[in-house]
Image (cartoon, rainbow over all chains, first blue to last red; front, side, top):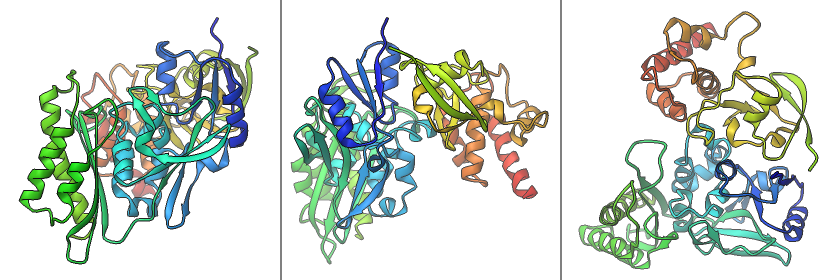
Length: 288
Length: 159
């Protein structure tokens, strides 16, 4: 009979050792909102489940050099209740709060959303646009990489055996910077993104965009960083010409699938529209 | 593998139970502790029928392992009434006939109680979004929302 082992270590070092020394399939349990569904359906039969919620540093949001360090087991609801984080990075917080219901929010985490590696993960494009990084602990110590370097395909990540993400880091927010995330679903709540668009911009004193990052979700096997779309914003005050170039660049970057939520053509078109709308919100938040 | 011995608090009472790793909190509540008020709908976190609170936080019992309950405080529908005295939400659900088959009702009540603790004066829109993770296939939701908003008004008036 299938009987997985379970451990709830209280330090990162113990968690890494358990993961590194285990034979067979291992899974990290933070909120469990994806993992338990996979267990229930039988598509995943891990030999070892490591619950990370008893590691104190993974349960907190701390400020670090003017930025934020969000522990890997912090839930969406906890992020939403963090006033300073919500004020500085509203797009990031809105994105994680779009994931599922109130019940899901009570458990689901940024890092779980990232490491589950769904192309449609809502928190991910917002984190990418904001320039977030992740701290990874493993048998050889810690390393830090950009969020977009974690997913390598649907359900796959760049993490090596024994490694786990222990935190997401958001940089200090530059002045006159605003971020936004929008997703499109066929209803108003409780569905998976057809397209998600994250935009972060920094303006100068005249309201001209000096730096930008644009990220798209659900339109390719992994989250996209669309440099051409960001370039369309830099140097502009978000006039019609910039918006048109942004829209075209976002559409050109798409490589989606057709499924019950939308066709390739539809997703591509919506990616352009959402990029424009998210850019408008980001400019406004930056003080334009 | 040997079963896990878990010590937890359920509805204010210390409770100990044994469970396997793969048993969900919903499995434990229903099959081990025979607290069958918490219902299984979808078992995938979509319907909210198994709503409980853990340390005051609303969650789906189907998306939590039983072993995770160690040292935490769990509240279920069985703890909502005070003896024979119904919670104001339970009373109002009866008055409004905000239920038909009843399978979703414990989840709606637990989720609504969590809403009013979080926000004693929700707008209709806030109540509808908060309860978006609770599905009802009978009532069409309107009576449920009215019952929740009317309870909120009563409880504000009483305090």
